[in-house]
Amino acid sequence: MTTFDLQAQEFLAQERIAVAGVSRNKQNAANLIYRTMRKSGHEVFAVNPHSEMLEGDKCYPDLKALPENVGGLVVVTRPEMTEAIMRECVEVGMPRVWMHNNTFMPSSVSDDATALGRQNGIEVISGGCPMMFLEFGHKCIRWVLGVAGRLPE
Image (cartoon, rainbow, N blue to C red; front, side):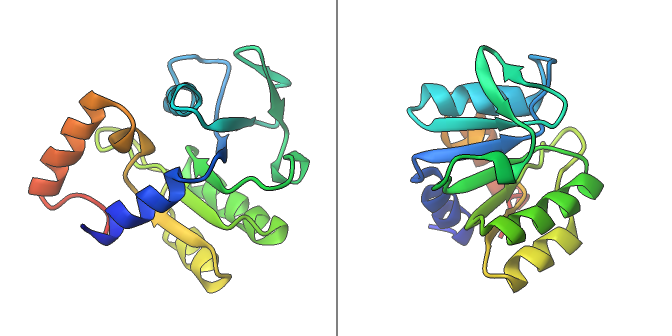
């Protein structure tokens, strides 16, 4: 099993996970991740400073507003926003962060955010997508990317 697989399993073992980057656009990748994680049994918290509700659920303006004991954060934003979010993760003591990378679209991964998180003891996954472990079609994509050597290390 690869380091990426182990990190993903540990991340997804958390019962309470937040997703930053959700939007009013239901087709947004963050919204799809949010819905899929909720369906898979996770207690999921939406983070967006511009929305109060997401798909009938409360939306939190920032990480400081989240309930306690959130075990991880999926970041689906532009890389320059990811850096600011990682600074907030350090501030609130977020233990795990997964920076989303859609293979066919822009990535949330920021090398500076990755370094900042790891320097502060945060378990950081820099790339890939939680959907690769939760939904059949995305599991197939994970296999193809693994064969092509395009998964995070």
